[in-house]
Image 1 (cartoon, chains in turn orange, red):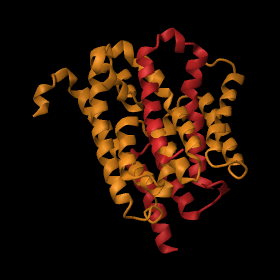
Image 2 (cartoon, chains in turn green, cyan):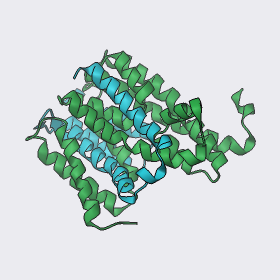
Image 3 (cartoon, one colour):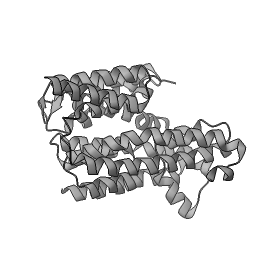
Image 4 (cartoon, chains in turn green, yellow):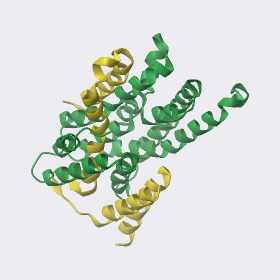
Length: 226
Length: 102
């Protein structure tokens, strides 16, 4: 099978990369179900996973819609969250050295997981292996489970299976690694949480999330860290 | 804006952000301030999303017992560095079981 095609020195990177892909699959199921519960069709839900292919953004978009926010607010929140992929691409570009169609495909696969796995490798060669295998693994499972969640999600009551508790827990799980990296991150998170909490009853849905970006001022008040 | 417009603009915007990093010369986006803002923005947005998804219903506070309990169990699992599947399953099971028995 495939395994014989993989050079021995690449096997550890490939195994880790596919492991990440499988783990993310569970999250895709939650996204599919949440998206359909928010009122998007199964087709719209699957197109987001296939072509937007960036989990945090996708969850933010359907989260704002589910909370009664306007599509404009959902789009703004989703795109702000998606802007970090530009930085990932800048970090990966010198390592991947892709041109033409391969660059267009690599761009689609530039996400949290593929970047993290690629930059964690010891050599650029292993970095490229990790990027493509993580991208392939996450893409495969993410889209399969999105479809599964979207189809079965419309058959079940989201609250009865606890989906409403899954969404904030999933966001926290995405946030956790960043909270562990430094005190600036933790302060920003606390200030952003307070801003969002305070604005919930006085602004339209979607606005508390966007306004939380004001918490970034904390980072600059503390001077230039690192 | 319709849901279809939202879906298509989200796709176009997300892809453009990704591709930009491969096309734009590093010196344009590589300024430390820009880099820092883009790096830290997800922290603020995700923290706000956690709060909104946990305690908001539309633009009202809504403190729902099973939802908060499920979230708390999920948060504990996150703190214990449990795998993603475990975090999600624990949060869902807690909320679902509490709704079943109350």
